[in-house]
Image 1 (spheres, rainbow over the protein chains, first blue to last red):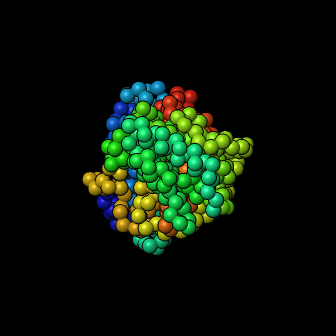
Image 2: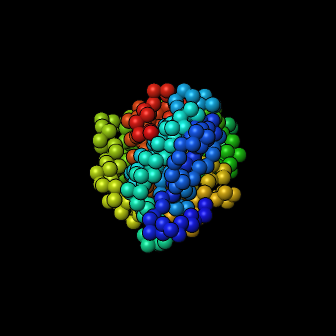
Image 3: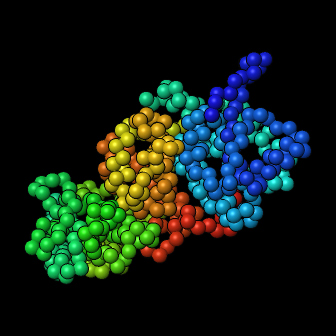
Length: 155
Length: 287
């Protein structure tokens, strides 16, 4: 992931970086629909397409934080709608437990979101990204992790 | 330190009988070397060597770790001395088809706890009398009632902190990690032939010992054991930097019990929470 070059006209305003893992069949199509329907949403979100939300390994999330993500989103099909029948059910258990693990270790759980967005929910996708961007702007840069990056915290 | 001579004697007698039976190639048990602070793993292959086996109150190690080792398995049928906690690990290995039940003989030993003072895992042990072993040596011991609050007290201590305090605590603890992977090597359930840490394409976890890589490693370790860890506490005992790894494992075990009413290793035919799902799982916290 490359460092986002800041817009020279808005250098003073910090732009968050959101990494989103979207399942190919629902959420990615939902984001596509948002685009086709001309629903604007903030450009802070960087989309990674995965075959299924069940594909998302917790290491994807850790890696994203390491590379400077301020928020990580995993989005898949609504329960019952998985293209592979049960991938999102597996993801639901694992990712919610993973969030508990992060919380236990003191890594802010507000930095890790899970959502269900269907292929028909372009409007939901657009408003979700707006909400998340506003929320993460409120939270500010993810310093817990960025401080590890610069070595201020620990070694 | 006290050697339990009646248990040791019947253990040696049982081992001798098993080894005389041609099918059993090796007995994995505990041995004693003078005043060593712990009784070391002992591998006995001949009936005349059984007097090397002992059982005392310093048999900390979880011998189930050897069951997945190729060098041991090549020997043939294995007899293994198990305490209740070790048996839980064996059950997980059976459940995950790492070993076959017919390839091992379980020699159960009732145990009232190891060490003095007792470590936390022994004082809250619910498996003092191992169930479902082929042979049990020694008499059954009294089993006190344990409640969930006692069992998960280490995790509760950290849960009581605020998120910032937790990070303060864990970043301090985890920055001590020297990445020796003793926690992995001693764990009976970390048997992957190729661990995620050894993979370089892509390299998910940085291997140098700095906090960023240490956090990733410990998150990966804890998560790979979620719903599998039996709480034997060997990782924490082996850790040269005294990182309280048990608290993390406890937290995940507590979640599995609260969410799925599941405790790992109580039987060998259970289904681990992450290998299955329920349509009724909670949606709380999902947008």
